[in-house]
Length: 338
Image 1 (cartoon, rainbow, N blue to C red):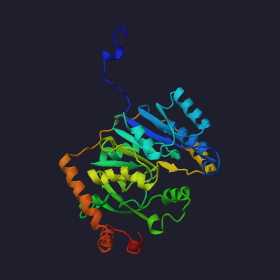
Image 2 (cartoon, one colour):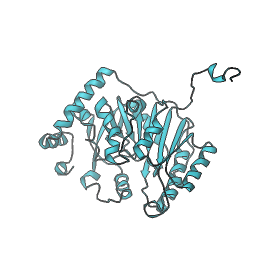
Image 3 (tube, rainbow, N blue to C red):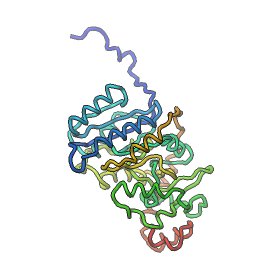
Image 4 (cartoon, rainbow, N blue to C red):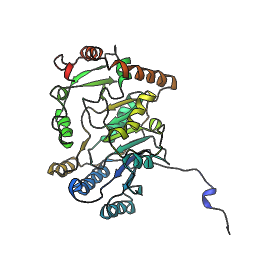
């Protein structure tokens, strides 16, 4: 028997003060071998996140079959209201875990992040600035890479053939790239020339690097909610993340990055610099207003998507690619190794 009226029926609309969601899948099944330092690194990551975000950030953590110790830590974070949402799953894989975090929400910006990211001050501020300055931005990574310029960005390159605001520029801080290479256990990830120059786009005196990685990346909600959230059998890796990466090419959006690092990848082995970096970089976070993302019309996005499709083929022609890199100012000695 029901007595009375459910109070939510009087006001069924959902109100939220949050506009930026951060989704972090966590899979730490034990503290052995590969996972020996993983819990320690997770705690550093969460600490740096909480120290660097504004109050309108909604944190979703997906426990993806972690050990009881890790799960208890995550529950404590939720009970203390340090995170807004905790989803507990058996190990369904990183990709399906991300799908769970995305579904049922509607945010202007969504950051998808690994559990080993060290967030640095102003990463949100710099990310928002890119969304507000450049049109049709789909993804922003707070760590630059000189190797990502062609990845789902061929359309931008093709339509910017005669644009003097797209050019190669000397890398201000190559140590950012070296640090990432070290974190993935491959010190030769970037060759000599890839540590010297990267491709940038300028608008209103602001520069961004062309290309975005995905160990931590902030998506335009308009783009991410176009994603097909059907279950996948791929647990993780490049093949699984391609469903996210390919959105930009399909719908005509850009993949961009900051010119210097506002986050660092820690990997699975703890090193002393991580704690030192967190201590040195800690500072009071200023509140940020909700960014006014520069959107463009459906017709323009359709045209951009066509450029992406054509560009994905034409940049496979080595002679064209080499010619393009040369006219955009890449060191002639670097062209065949870039």
